[in-house]
Image 1 (tube, rainbow, N blue to C red):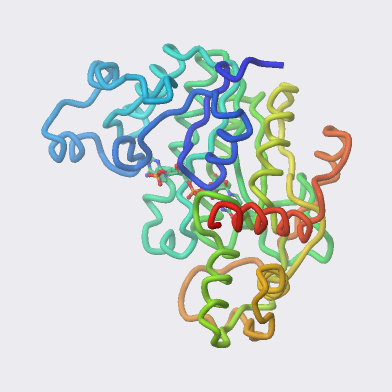
Image 2: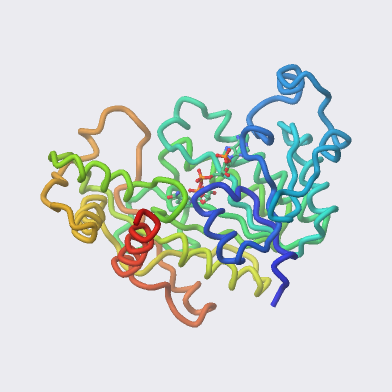
Length: 330
Ligand SMILES: NC(=O)c1ccc[n+]([C@@H]2O[C@H](COP(=O)([O-])OP(=O)(O)OC[C@H]3O[C@@H](n4cnc5c(N)ncnc54)[C@H](OP(=O)(O)O)[C@@H]3O)[C@@H](O)[C@H]2O)c1
């Protein structure tokens, strides 16, 4: 078992990153900043001009500091693969983590269609930079990927070795990231998960509940079926998997499957709202946006064998999430 201080979480303010930091009981290292100080999509020159200062290791070093909680933190203006590498190299050199979780991601699936370069910069080259820095530092990497690498034409849950064929820019950029990570660090563990909900950032479930509270019917697609997953369950399992030092690709999701509408109905029921407000709609009716797989259920059997059992069923996990959410709001 690693000391939590030997674990580095990248993207600690994101939906999953927050759950991972909580699973490490807040004692892991975090790379502070996110987009404001560590924007993977911007060129160094532009950033330097905007910031009115030089970009590079010295500036990154100067911005190293301690956050209030006493955790090592890093903030830097490092925008391309090389700038990003400088920052990550420093983070790894200063922190000497043995295990790195990469929860950084360009995750706005619809916006990615309008910003393919930004999606690739974060999900492709950003992932490559992380993997290269880990390879150089001898750290083990757990990198997050997605069910959206599949085209949704399967008639059974997707296994790790099923051929990917993404439908969207987001899916393509994530697949590019998987390939670049493997190229830089053959021993990295790539974990594909899906349809996340959890504390910290609003997801589909929170939006459904907000709509439900308005008391008016609203459309929810029923021709997209996937694997809803609670970030707390995912984070605990990731922490366990990460410390087993295994590489390759694993699918990791809560048990069971649901359409978007089934998930919405269950969320409304559990929140004490009227489930009939979630009206059946078809993807073809949704205006614009990225194409999403019709069926992207992930087979997590391989992860269950490694972990000694599957993650809990999603409806039970959703109940726990909503109970925790009520506690916070009370
Ligand atoms: N959410 C899902 O349903 C889902 C499903 C399957 C797989 N995944 C994968 O799981 C991982 C974590 O997802 P998530 O839902 O936790 O994502 P998220 O909430 O959107 O968080 C993403 C993180 O990446 C950072 N980031 C985004 N753009 C950046 C940029 N240009 N430069 C630097 N940092 C940037 C964000 O920083 P800020 O603090 O600045 O926002 C944030 O810390 C991703 O790899 C995602 O592809 C997610």
